[in-house]
Image (cartoon, helix red, strand yellow):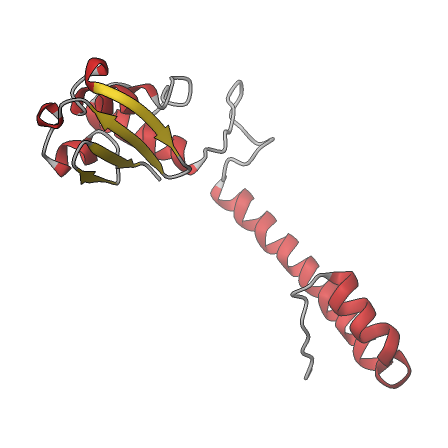
Length: 165
């Protein structure tokens, strides 16, 4: 239909105030076509997704099996459940009910030489910063930390950063 548009700033900013209000007098047929195309795609998306959900019986919230519950998991919950499943600590079905961070924390604590070896702990959104009393007690294997759920480890003397996110 030769239509184009930019909705990057939202309906009010980009669409209404930058286009419709100042340009309506000369471009109103285009704007009416945009509304028609938008509503048409809304109907198409609804019918397509409804068909796919019913045909393949996707379990969406409100369509669970009798007595079941569909839960949306965060990325951290998913990774922790996979790690627990891999280690055999919990099955995938009950991983959502368990403390997802306890196995990782226990693994990191052991690899860092135990609670008595840790002198200070600090963190940010993606790293656990730890200072230790005796760096020789810390496991030297990057693979061990990755097996415990870390994405990596940074070492500098007695200071360690366990990358968790």
